[in-house]
Amino acid sequence: MSDDPARRIAFELSRRGLAAPARLLLDAHRPLAPLLSDAGAALSPLIRLVGVRPMEDVAGLLVDDAGLDRLIIELDNAEARHAEPG
Image (cartoon, rainbow, N blue to C red):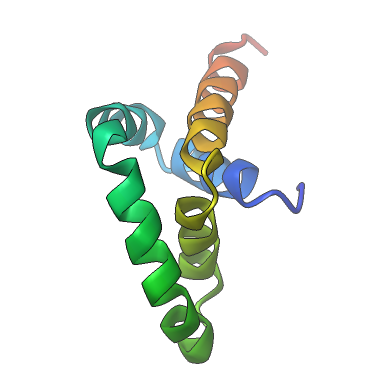
């Protein structure tokens, strides 16, 4: 598995059958991306303090301007791989 947080999160969401709902929520909340980025920057030190790795990945994606876009691309890729026969 790649070390890319977007790919790891997309893989886990896809594995749990939550890629489509996550993709829908990301599209719906795209206008809030700047606010989510600020929240991610503010909460990131607290999340690191607790030591929760998946939440740290999410906070990292929120702080990154292109993080949500990368997550959407990875969710689409994960869904495409899941839909392939075989």
